[in-house]
Image (tube, rainbow, N blue to C red):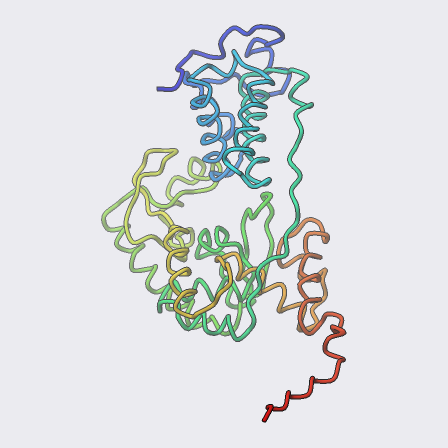
Length: 360
């Protein structure tokens, strides 16, 4: 079992008392007893995403277990660096994953334990190299979509390519976010907590109406049987207790069964799981005979690249993708330089070699 303590343990060195740390950081005192529950409490107070919560809890638990269940308050910089070195040298973690583990531990020490030590700023950050994204050609994309199973999975794949949404943004769409009259789709609290508006492809209108029809049958069954409704963002559930059961807040892509909300413990209707779609995508990729390491996120790369190839302005593409910095969008201009858009190879300027004559 992991350490279970009432607040942080007394520290050696410059560990602050929890209350003092909380006031210095303008954070309220923690109410949870167990350490990982305190971590979850602080993450939720700061409105971090559920994916971030799961990742931070995973890395902090791994850190504690790797050090023989020692309490983090009894450890410091050397133990953190030893764990990160193990992840990089023996586990071979990618720099981005390595950086995520470091962020989780810094959050644990700074925001939960209230420890302010010099080593927190001195630990080196792994350098993340920017890689060219995998992009499918229009012909490859057509083959892939043709092999996606009919219904919500094929519709979801077409939606990701047609709008450039991240898979999490598409799965979290609610009925109210589709504006057929304005041919717009509203992304609520995307990456970085930002809202944005993207186009609603005309080619998807009929399929989306059919999907809403299927979703409405699921919603009507839930209203009849009376589960707790869908999850509501922030404190809206307390402000509008019945909103979670309203059709306008229902998922466009609901899961086919009820599940337990890990935060509230209530039985709810969750949206479609991303793992379900990822498996369908992988099978379609194999069936289409595409020898590229594509993932559902590749559809977002294709959206951006194909828009730029067709002459769209990079600032427009930046807004559609929800990038805060145009430098992030510029990676797709490098993709455009490949193949036909690149400098011609000198080999292509050489005359074709003469065929060797057969010796008598």
